Length: 86
Image 1 (cartoon, rainbow, N blue to C red):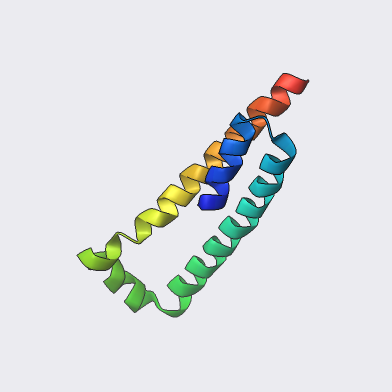
Image 2: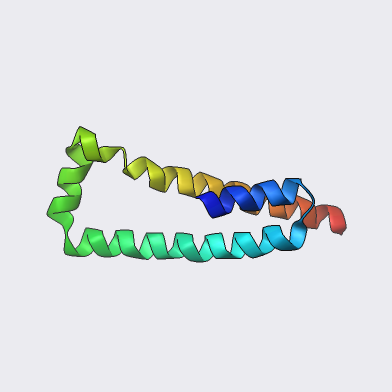
């Protein structure tokens, strides 16, 4: 999530090459998060369900949602800049 936030900040600050590099890294990290979450669902479904119902651990699932939002915002910000170049 932090890499995506830095990417958006760099993009807004005009550091486009740095922002795009960080966005690519964010995409790789996000893909890894998805793969590991799916793997956990397949191999440890019971524990994952228990975590989702435990108020102390359910908050961790919001990290996935926030990461999705940051990655989407980075893609949108990058797309806006590319559109302006054309």
